[in-house]
Length: 85
Picture 1 (cartoon, rainbow, N blue to C red):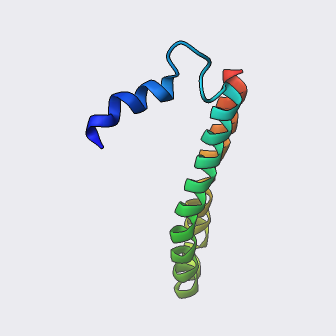
Picture 2: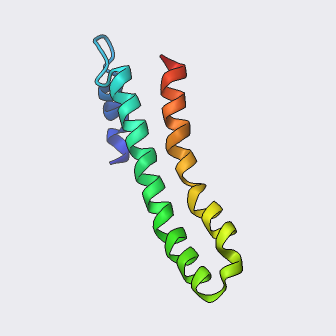
């Protein structure tokens, strides 16, 4: 695998021809991966927040804030796309 890295890098960069991935495709992958990471983070945070609120009602606001924090990843990805274009 390691001995093929230079060949894979040359293919990814498409030396001498057009790139494999255009700017819009790269932006779509960035937003998609950001959304996937947000869902993965909210999976654990959401279940922990529900459990904490079930035990003590006073932690509702911090639990809500911690649940909403990962969504900023997708918002930042969208803003980055519009700024980059």
